[in-house]
Image (cartoon, rainbow, N blue to C red; front, side):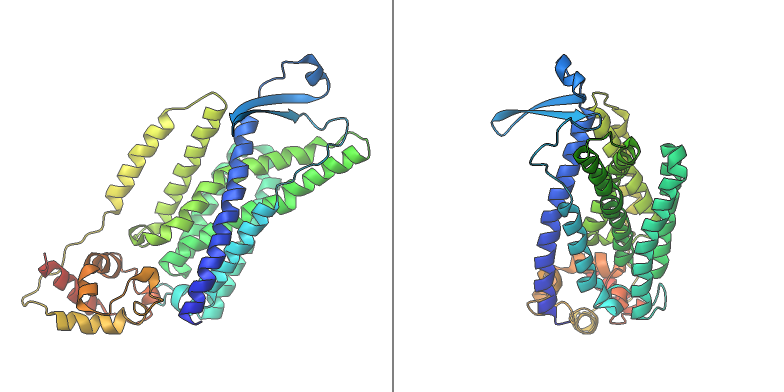
Length: 387
């Protein structure tokens, strides 16, 4: 694909993805917070009419009073607001980004021959298959293990996320592996909305229209899936943002790092959920801070340069940069605007070159330009000589 066209599509689809994601996550977090903060209605007539809890809030210059019914009110409210297109738009735009950035240039961005010697079509098929399998496995677990114990479901779920993260790391390039797991989890979230939550709401509305008592079972399952989405949100956001930090996705045990961060971010949501319910658990943020520090220490790259008997000239470095880096990092469509066209530009980005090409070896993506170990050592020695 033409680099400029790819960048135009990237920014347009990414803006849609981010805006829709903010709307979806914001609504989801708000309703979780609302549900957890509900208190028994103070008016006896509200309780008699089926109100299970109420919530008072101040925002936007006024007071708001929200009520949740145990099942449904006696009469159909009009208008009734639904929350679904935010989720669908987020997934559709996210998958479109995956196609534009990773499937179209699969040889460059999705495949790393040093990880797995896959053809582009094989990598794309494995990616799509993994996304579909994630939902099927999760849904089957919810209908079996989840019916007996949500705690057991969480344990099995973490184990399967670990397996998915490890498997993706064995099949795809380092950056693509993280994104693949994020798309798998994001697909689970939107499929929960499409196949479980919205159908349960439709059954509730249909029962109201037919003046009959709604079945509580689908509503309870919809509530459980909403809670699952609440805990999956932050791990998915992590995979979206971490593509800018090669020391994480390029770590030796990157799959384990992801699992630890996923558990940690889920714990953060546990903290906020308990806080909203008036039961803050203060050991969680304490553990989170200690864990982040420990992860940062663990992931610190070894930046020691190999010993060189003779100084390395810029001309030697320039030939490596021109052959291995400049094919992408030049012109107006250079990634992140980072260009290696002049000595001044190369020297200005020397630290980034060391981090990305020498320490984490994340660049070039999939080693598409065939940089050798000797060339990486040459770059490291030159950067070290500069002090």
